[in-house]
Length: 114
Length: 112
Image (tube, rainbow over all chains, first blue to last red; front, side):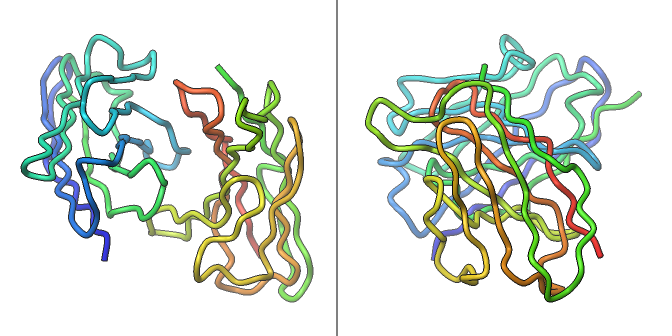
């Protein structure tokens, strides 16, 4: 069974940093491209970032470019999202998701507020 | 960036009756490989999203056959043949043909 377990969400002040992690199991992580998607409270879905299976290419939404860094550890089946210079508009639930877009985990909540 | 526009944003429905959600893209979603990378997701209240339809019309495993996807080019539709209570939630279209970025529609709230 494919499982995705996000963690690392927290309450942080504007300008602060967080690192999200996504522990995966049930599929061959090293051959699967991955994405991060977020959802602000009461709002829709927004793609944040993507990474190729090898990690050699990364992609970002304009709203996070230069502040967020996606990475992966294929030896540990882990996906990461380093979030720096956080802003209030970064508040929301963050989901990691495979390139096939199934399944979705429970997400991890990031709150950026003073 | 491909803009995805859904309508309506709120859809009152009657149980047992059909429902239809429209999604339009700002450019054709036909990929150079011939495929159309248009997905539909359902998000029930308090739950994570779940994919219902992929590549325009392919239904995911476990998705009731009352759900169907159709369309071409820039106009797409999600149809529910007979709405059931468990269908209440928000529906999103998403394009994966022209990326980055991958883009979603605003969401359509299905409500009784």
